[in-house]
Image 1 (tube, rainbow over the protein chains, first blue to last red):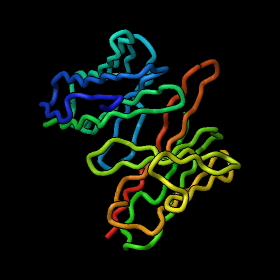
Image 2: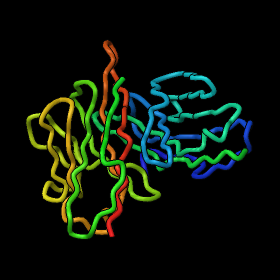
Image 3: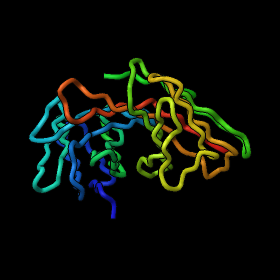
Length: 107
Length: 118
């Protein structure tokens, strides 16, 4: 069993739709990261969370430490949001990564 | 924050050859990591690059196959040696940056090096 599980694995949405990507983890963590990977392979850090909720523009990330669950929301989705979104957790000196959610937003 | 320059961004290599990937950070960082991402898979840690000492390798990865250099706190290289088609992957370097007073570090990644071995 992976330490970090993401769902869904693939997601297709129409432009403007509200999108939710979920992440569950099984280890104790000091922080959870949401990452965005574009087709070229480069990865950008979107959020680092240890509690509560953070918002950057159209992106919102929440975490529930008790339930070991985090969600990434995208409001008013746009084709440029198409990417792979990866959930990563830090546990001690280790980082564990989910397999990613591939999002395609259709105009 | 940290800006990481990684190169090459992609390469096509012949079986049996070696390729060195470079990672340059715009600030001094203590922790630098090398990851591999095989097609459709999550990131797998290859090793932690330690400045001034040998890298620490994860299970399944060995120094002879993936030699790493870390001559200073802003630069590291990963060499993929004696390549085979199974080494075709994206290779990424990553650093952790701590903000003053923070107990957790923020992850930053290079742009990735997409390697295809024929």
